[in-house]
Length: 210
Image 1 (cartoon, rainbow, N blue to C red):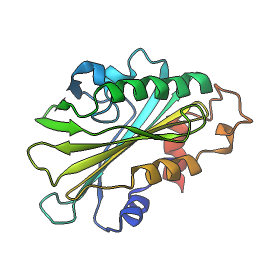
Image 2 (tube, helix red, strand yellow):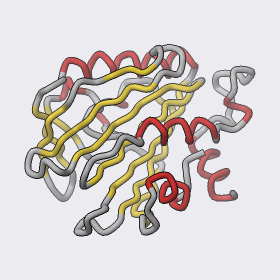
Image 3 (spheres, rainbow, N blue to C red):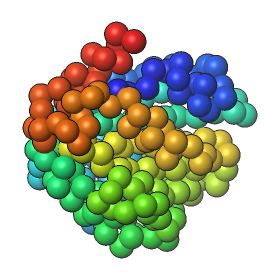
Image 4 (tube, rainbow, N blue to C red):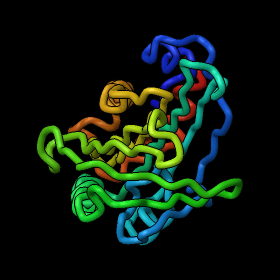
């Protein structure tokens, strides 16, 4: 279900993105203020712990960040017990993201701390009908470097992505849609909410076999 590095390269019109991380668990990053939820990045524990997610998978790609056309991309899929649980997660994140609009957000990772300015989140389509929540994050130390976050629920699956670039990006909703388009038939409206075929482990297997 997750896109291959070649597919992401094609979407962004580049050819040199490389896979740097593929992990079946949440990351170790955190952000402040904590009430901003997952606005800063996918796979934040403060967003997902206690949300009812069952399993997750995250992948990162990047190219040479010193060149003019440079990107980092993260794509994450998480399965929940039911469709209402997945869409409820997006509703809750929408409220948290909006509470942090136009605020400074600090992102802590194992290697660095960075400072961002959150834009105004926007929900394209309905929260409960597969709409895509987006927001732009601008790095305060380098205003040319910005990220677009996108979050959406499809069936019992939450798709959570970010695309960062030297001159920003508007492709995050497209990435969400491309991931959604690859959902196995088991993850359509005809499937049982907790169908074992709708899990990130299966998504990764299908992606690897393509």
